[in-house]
Amino acid sequence: MIATKEAEAMVIEVESTTLTAANAKEFKAALEPYLDAEMNIVINLNRVTFLDSSGLGIFLFCLKKLNQKGGDVKLCNVTKPVRVLFELVRLHQIIEVFNTKEEALASFSHT
Image (cartoon, rainbow, N blue to C red; front, side, top):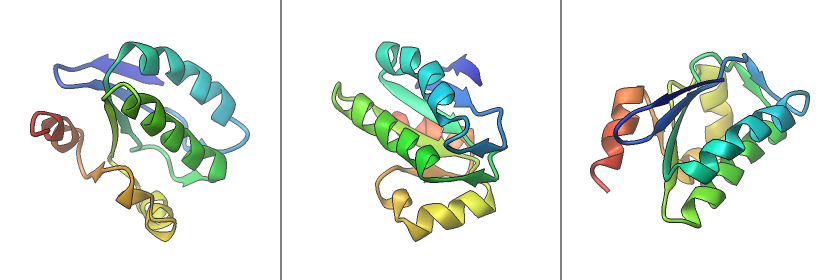
């Protein structure tokens, strides 16, 4: 995971190609300090080509934790297979998904 502080939000780039039960717990543990310290987070999924319910659960966990303190999580650079899954489970209606990191960051300045 690569974390970069931007003016609008912390950008987290997932380095793995999958987010599944096999690695979800360690990814979530690595995310937690950022969830505690930041109000707004953008998760860059440009390398992720597969995720399961454990991976989906991480995004909902992030959303809940940040919403509790008035923050938000947004996703960007979602690959086609992951986007299909998001639409299937309607996650894109709960968490905003953007084509680029820049679009996701810009959306924070409009809220």
